[in-house]
Length: 172
Image (spheres, rainbow, N blue to C red):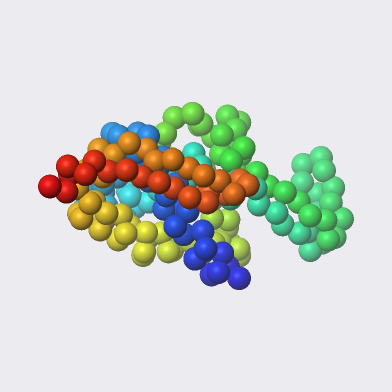
């Protein structure tokens, strides 16, 4: 089911990254330069930071296999525990300068892909599929770096549609 979830959310995550970077033109240009130079670590920093702004899954839910204690809270075996990555990634007690868009933020500051033994396959997909998709976009869609941020439509908390307009004169 992990692969199914990754494939279903992939276009939505792509749109979220595009939107967040178009909101920040200087970062969009730096991201494009990293992608075109095939500098995967630097490009991944921009992707992760964009997803920190708008995580594809703002709430994650896990079931406790055993009785568990987290801080002052106790959970019995079988308890459902919600986790809010968006809140954690903007908590000043956990994040240095949470309101700053920082593509050089240390990877440990992100809660986007889980961790061992439940790390999301989407992280590997971003590097192997996502970055080539952005490379194709930057090489073959003139004017995309100058496009205005698109419009989101949501189905609950998850992105459902994204519309982007590129100036038609860019194709002349």
